[in-house]
Image (cartoon, rainbow, N blue to C red; front, side):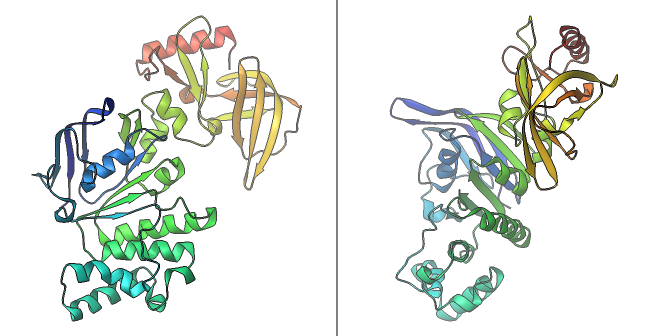
Length: 349
């Protein structure tokens, strides 16, 4: 069991209050991703779990035990950093073994643990090599193996894939998902990359300015955002958002929920527009279309439309989201019906 709880936690650096009265529970065995823009407080939370950046106030519990003042070495937590944190002068074997030696683990037990862990991450054939002779992905596996060999209750990962190229990042994402399933241990992963968050997490904690904007499964955050920030941070391209004419209300829709047609249709809401750009993204086309309110992104499997062509955009009512003057999601069905009518009457989108 490795449940982590933040209870009314605050963190300040001098007069700069980074996190205020935060409450969060990370459930045992989950792959939880803390995601948000730079400076949102996600790494600060990770460091507080690790014990290398203690909270200013509040409590942090691990398995219902208060670890707020417990030294990092006694927390049964392993951390994998962005820069790998491996020793270049040591072989792969020596890197994995280093922590075990410091903890006075017997030699035969060390050997068994190293063999077990190196096999699970595909390093058996590289144990006698130095890090300089390894690829970026292999060095990342060494860092993971060093963490795994300690058999921690929790793995903390601070943007561990950011130094890898795009192809290798995809491969390592798959590797980490497989590893989490194999170990059945709590993973807490920090990233600013929403693609990493969406593809790897069981549970996402989306942050901005030290505040949790939304926490839910990836599918829930994508399909059912609580606010404008969630709607636009998660998703590529982000949700199209506009102001509803004559009100303080905003409305939006996902690029893949809009469709284009050469002829007007009576289904849902539609309006005439013009193709501004056209990008081929493998199996789909990403269009940027021009409206008087601004540019709209549309994802489509239909590649029939060309630059500067005048077409019609259509969005079904069920895929249009509304947000209040504080950017919070409007969920009242009566209000939504009124705003849909207003939107159609005003001839917007």
